[in-house]
Length: 463
Image (cartoon, rainbow, N blue to C red; front, side, top):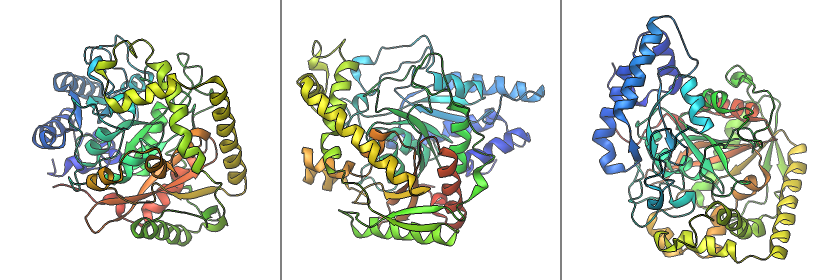
């Protein structure tokens, strides 16, 4: 086995397993060994299940020897965010109050990963309830590129683990940017699917109408492989749309030639690194044959500012069984969100729903004029922990960070985050490709074309 097995792409590992050049037990043991060496410092895992993972790997190897394959992920070790229910393994959602919550059924996305042959290594650490900060009793994951920098939230463990070779892919969730922030901060390719493309059954909710579940990987091709497994209608989730699931891998080489790429001319709050990353992406797509089209982004400042109110109402619903009755067991930041939601009037909620409808309408109209839309992830390309502390967590500072993520949670459009540069401090920077509803195939093909022309996705943080 190569010493850098842990940094192979999911696609490459799957092909080696299929060709019997690598066994699932070998791959699983190698990753578990690396977790043992690296994760005591990085804190990416909330729960590791080595015995279960090795037993599953051995069973999958026996199936391979018998000529049976479960599918694209047969024998590949992956991990999931700790809000996805796992039968017999605690699901805490980043909350000590739920540390003893042991589900009897897998979330649909976990069941589908297993049905496709994936080996589940364990559960990845996350912020409290999938909101903005980690619970005070939990040590946050560490950015493997530079420990002084933010690892992203709330899928922080998913970002750190996938970037550091502690799994070959992971699942994250995104309500306001929580696939996209840790993907860009850790140099990953993160896919927030269209709302309704992936079932949320068995996934602990932050705000159900805003929550999206999706893959966090090292390439667009890997994301296509995982999405093809987890997407689709689900009798346990009536909001999972009953549309056919395309073969995302089959269409991954579709490219961007002749496709109209919307380039906003009114970006605001951009620092030099974010602008450089964005400009480099435009140049790469133009070189790949895309047709840049100048567009004007709708004004989203109000949506970014008021997203917290909408999130708070739905989060209060999700936590009605334990909040405010067990307030003392909640962190201050998350408790303040729930208080905000509980205090909102029906009239205020009505205004928020109208605002959200306007955001979706504006974006639908914009995306009808182009095939794809290019936007930053953040105006400040990479936040240090010190800079975030200095800026504080006022409604305005949080809204500024959410400006380019929240609108697409409100509208439900699919986005693909791609690594596109590095700061002087050696931290990755990224950008987003946004597509029309259910055009994951289009944004994945665009991301793959970009990654065929660049090598940012091949950079790794640690030996």
